[in-house]
Length: 197
Length: 91
Image 1: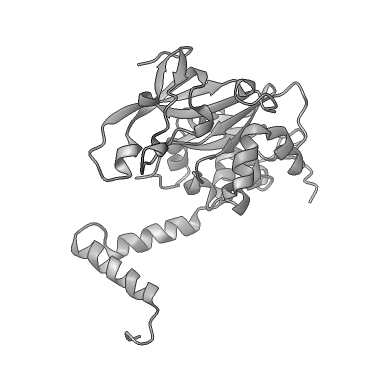
Image 2: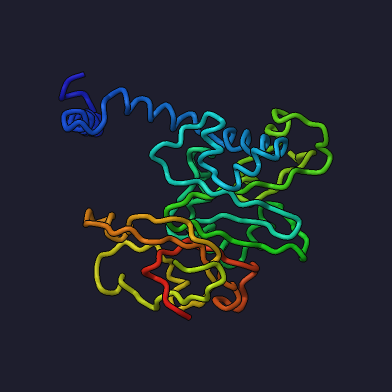
């Protein structure tokens, strides 16, 4: 490709990569490795962590104490990333995560945020009317359950550890992981042994 | 360091009215009273990092608020937010 046919964005990217290498900030290989890591990140990673926590009490304790260490223990690279906090849903309390300021999201374990997570509507309404937002996701919680909205504003990233659904007794971690959707780990939905769709 | 259970008030300050800035304290919490839940660690002040200024390290806290003290029609039972020490004052 020459200067006449390549797009301005490609020239800009090549120039940036050249400067990063020349200044000793990042090599071509390091950039490629980080791009590959970002592409691998998906809700399936978070689902593996949740399913493992459901079947191993020691791992569950680690996950709640230090989410980043728990991710590393599952082979997910967390170096240089913000700390990961994990919020446990219980019989008494349901957690819902929002970033009212922008779109902070635990990308290493859940991948790119869904489009609605970044929308002004979700960000404004989740904090003020969480039950209304949950209802629109088809999530009806009992009135007695406390709803805690976690506004992700600063240096942590937050993931929800959902309650293990009834009817999954004896299931192994792989089968449990297959139940989980990204919304379950944001707190807009809850997993079910018999998903409606 | 603030102990869990300490009542705090978020400073009623609006730097965005004075000029360019980068703030991680949501507007809806300015001037509101909450309770420290836990110390989350120490991090460099993002308000300085955003402008490539020397950034001091600040304590970061999880602070809980009662939603109905902010909005009378609020539907949740608790709002939990990360706030830096420079935004918190004794309540």
